Length: 260
Image 1 (tube, rainbow, N blue to C red):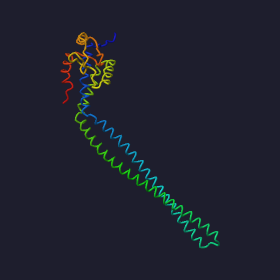
Image 2: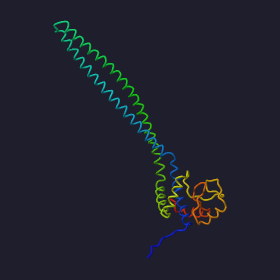
Image 3: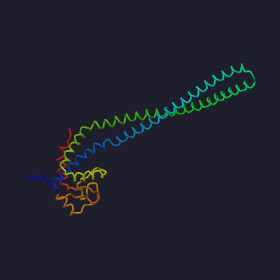
Image 4: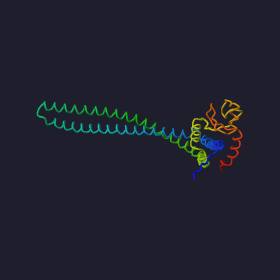
């Protein structure tokens, strides 16, 4: 026996498309109530991450400068030890030549101490500068985190108010999508993606597609009302349906998308 295939009429396809549009439009409304909050939260998280990386770099640079100071202090301590040693040796020299040689060594070590002290001052100044910058960054990070906490709480509050309804409608959208063949569903989604208001299927308002100023010719309006083929508006690119279908499906869908 040949396998039976179920072929739905164009009118049924149009009704299924408009039903899906009603569900998806309600989902859009819910998500739009959150406004720019999700983007603001994401931007704040990225900003904080960037500031924390800069703070970590400052901390690393402070550690490097501190290590340099420790090295220079070791040089100074070693130089002082050598100076004491050379001065003690001067008390026991046999001639001026040995005394002068030790004097030159002492002078060299004193120069090493002076140079190290100069470097220590430079490193200390850099540390002070970095600490000041780090303090400013830490304050800014704290402010941003507090702001992020507030924005997250605000967003979570909005989501919690509508999450159950959104989950319900997402399931309904999947359910109604299954009533539409894959090719037509892809076209619908593509039109929605390219539409600023998310509308892919629209009725006529005073002879023009909803949201458009371009009148549909009377002959085409008759074709739309006959529901014999899928008609795409040449200006807006949207699928067109007649007023009666809009009213009928809108009334029917009131109970289906109603959420308690």
